[in-house]
Structures are given as structure tokens and as C-alpha cells.
Length: 437
Image 1 (tube, rainbow, N blue to C red):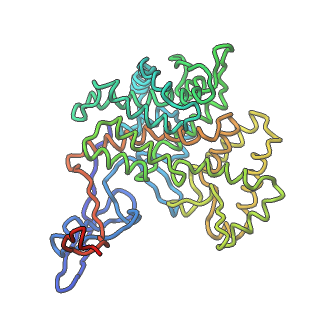
Image 2: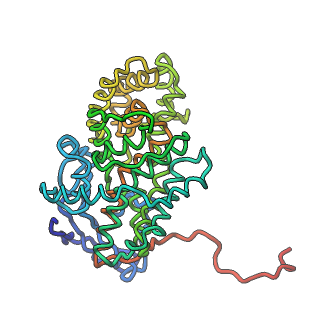
Image 3: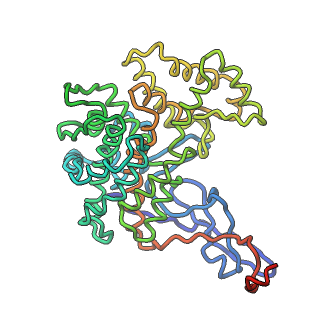
């Protein structure tokens, strides 16, 4: 494991309020923007900072993921995302995120065996599905089952025991594909397919998702590699909403299954994990290629309320580095499947072409992001739109666990407690019911 590093003081900043001044440390990490340490601001000046949505606040120190949105850079433990997506498997990347270094061959074999031996679910968990409506959203099932895992695996919820933390991590990484695939099978009324230990992580998920008992299933290497890349590209993304949710829940010493269930619930929102679903919805609303110009004009009209989904990013002000890899993968998948006359996919490709050459979008750096291409790939591979976010959750589970593990092992960790600006009524006396007029 890579040696842990902490931020260092690189300077000071002076803040004056009224007749008082405070000298605050400025901290710097190994990469990125320096941060003013405001932890003693209240004791020195009697004030707090105000940062709605935490867009300018570093909530923690982390050695896992680094993003430079202006330059379009994404690093996992220092490694560029394009190199990992091109050369690694998802389980190699999972090991890297969890442990800080890429595994040696023996380490990867041991880790892979550990994951593989935990892919089956406790048989009594099957009974959960009979309690869901047949048309229940897969994310609702995912939230419920993952949250309930602490009841089935109470031997791995002691967060102070390193071995139990390791087992709970293995269990979640291994079992989330099974839970996700079973949610789909339940929706469509097909038999649950049990995992196979002779298949790779991505192959196993595709097998459990698409196979039926009546036919032999033969893995397709192009589609398997595409699935693996999707998992790698979505594995972690710094302190986003769902990761922050996992850390917030974990700061209370909640068990890891509960923390990951909280992350899944946060990811469910259409502004976060549901973005690739929104891309497909947008394409359906456009309808046909000939309607794209009119749609583009609506997007340019600030008063129309029409948004171009799958373009631009809250963090990236340049081309999303994940999108470049996903774009290549998208064309590989479409070529492998021989898809040439799928209207929605043709529509997406034309919309991509126009947006990449239209000065309005280019000047605003509204490039296609990872959600735009992942939605197209998943649709081409036969995944229903409702499964897009669960697949995102499947991939992000390893990032959530890595972030949770890092937080739990940080001796300075304490329960999270944001502050607020109170805007309600000032202090007042109670008025008896009969005197309220």
C-alpha cells in the first residue's frame, strides 16, 4: 500500500472582521488548488464560512482521486484514467483504489479469488424480491437489498476490525453485480441466474443479466471489454454527491452496508447518476434527425428551458477525459453489433457531430460527457434505460468503499456537522391557543 500523505502548510491568509483579525493556515496537497484552513475561524473571529452546495469547500483530505476540471484530467491514485481504461481490468483498478498501488500478479490473483468467492447471495435474500412490485424501479431494489445486507452478514459490520472491513468490501464489490442483474430479471419475469466463478467480473455480470437457462451463453470479448471500461470509468470521481453521502453516513460509525445504501440513494437523483437516462429521454423527445436543428435553436434560447443533456460537466470545463475513451468504446460496440439503422443511435451520433462543430457549444466548452456515450453504449448492448443508474452504482461501489475505508482509517475523522445561516423567526414567547387571534 502506498504511504499515506497529509497536506502541508504552504502559507497563511489573514481575514479581518470588525476589529479582529485571524491568521489562517493555507494548506496544499500533492496536486490541485491550495485551501484556507478555516477550522479555527469561529473561535478567533466568531463567524463561520458560507458555501451552499460546498462548491468551494474541501471536506476532507483524500489520496484516492484527483480531478483538474480546467485541463480535463482524472487520476486514480496518480494514474491517468485513459491509461487505466486501456491497459487494466476493473478488478485491477478496484485493487488500486482500495490499496493505493497496482497489484502484482500474485496480489491480483488473491484479490480476484477473494471477490469471486463472494459473488453468491445468501439464499434467503431471494425472498426480498417477492415483496417488490414487478415494476419496481431497479434502484429501489438495489437500495433495499444492499441496506439489508447487514442483517445477513453481521460478521462483517465491525468497522474497527480491519479484517471485517476487508470482508465487507469484498462482499459488496462481489455481490452488487448479482443484485443488479437479479433486479432486472425480476422486472422482466425471467429466472434468476446464479454467478459463475469461471467468468471474469464483467463477463459474469453480462452472463447474469442476459443469460437464460434454456440457452448457452457465450461471452463476447468486445462487449465484455466495453463493460469493463464502463466500470473503470465510473469507479470513482472524487467528492461528488453520492461519495460525500457515503462519507457523511460513515462519519457516524454506521456499518458499511448502510453507508453504501445511502450512496445508492444519493446516486439515484437524475442530476447525478440518472444523467445518462436523461440523455436517452432527450433523444426520444427530439425524435428524428431532421428535428435536431430546431432543438439546437431551443437550447440556444435561454428562455426556452430546454437543456442539452449529456454535454458539459459541473467539474470539467474541458473535454471530459472519460468521454474520449467512451466515445472510442461506443464506436467499437456499434461496429461489433452491426448497428447501422437504429434511429435513436443515429440521432445521437448526428447530435454529437453538430455539437462538436457548432461555435455556440465549442465556445462554451459544452463537450459530450461520459453520460452521453454511456447511455448509447448501454442501449446498444440491450440494457433498458431503467438499468443505467444501477450499473453506475455497481461500478461506483468500489469507489464508495475506498473512500469509506480511507475515512474510517483516518485518526482525525469525526462526525460531520455542517453549519447554517438561520433565516427563521427570532426568539419569541409562546402564545396560548386562545390568544392567537
